[in-house]
Length: 60
Image (tube, rainbow, N blue to C red; front, top):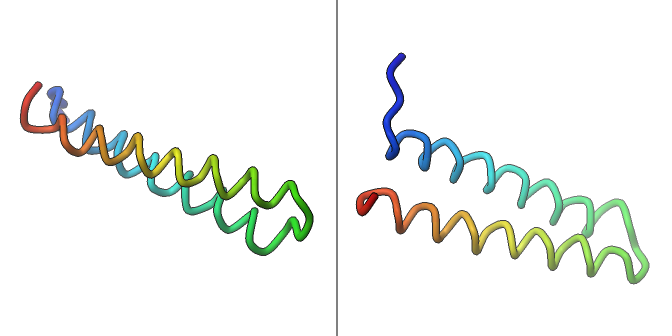
């Protein structure tokens, strides 16, 4: 399987979305105290980085 820059960015976007959803789920369901807000904030940050990777996919 040959991978170019666009497929690498696509896979990176998918992985970042999955990790972001996992972190948000940890913050929502596992930690009920203040630590949950931190996990959710980091998960939203992962979504933002995945959005940037998706925007760069056709330009690199």
